[in-house]
Image (cartoon, rainbow, N blue to C red):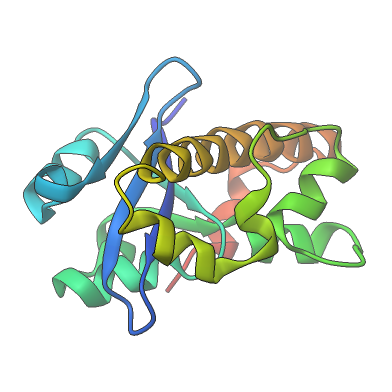
Length: 165
């Protein structure tokens, strides 16, 4: 099976990324931020990867920030787009879809206000909470994708049709 990575970014208005959460699996995951948030470190995470899974505009934001075209080298799958094609939901916010499929969070504060993300990132006493939230985002996205993919029998052939172009 081709190697995959799941990514979740946090960024300021205007698109400057300050945090990238990533996971190959629940046991192999981490984050890039502060001094570790560099293009070269991010690209090293992609060594051997065929599929990049994300939810929303994250790949486009990364491409813009570093002036690279991930979609030309990798199969970039916006999970949000696939979900919209496979089921109807009242809301396609990740937290809502998680609950639909029986995945619950320990950190829900930032689902209420995106402004808190930016304020807490700049506050050293609150930064750890935001790191936990981002880690939970990427791990839950991966778990949710596996459940939905299995439930609907989504195959790689379909994903190749849905990849970013």
